[in-house]
Image (cartoon, rainbow, N blue to C red):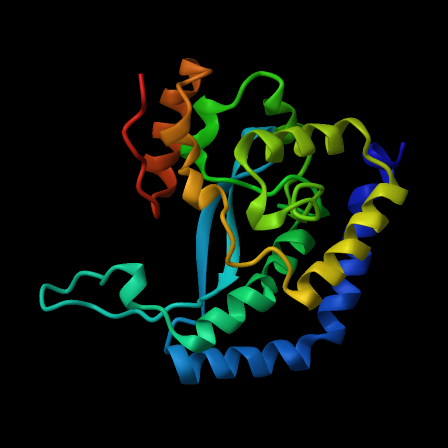
Length: 229
């Protein structure tokens, strides 16, 4: 009953109230980002949400927009800044995702929305993660965060979907607060070291390749890697 009737309403009320309360902090954050990293302040990432529908996740920019002599962006490693590291480590760069929750694209708690080009690589069981709204935090984030490997992450996501309850959501939010405050599981081996999902797995659902291409053509804004046969 909670999943079907109350979760969305609770998300909306809590997030709207919280966003209003932190609006002064949010304004200061925007001004600091503009001063230290330049415009634009925000950027959007195309991710996959509920029922495998694409959404644009809003984040605060945390790296410089620096171009080479040909007008192309420099590699990410050449555009990092200390202030950007602070934003990522403190998770302040994710504050605008509250807007996604208010709009109904995301939930406070749920499987983290991932890139569209990962869709063909999920097993049918792992596709359960897309039967609910993606979350700002989730069971995987409080059980390893950056340390969590792909198989473990998806196992946590499926466990969350099967056991959704108000009590579990409150527990996850509570533990997330302390994870972020203590900056746990940051800067340690992670899925980025293991490699993108498309690099460590073969395609599980080839019928999704065409759908991913349609998303890319319609939405743009990300690079789709070559699919592993």
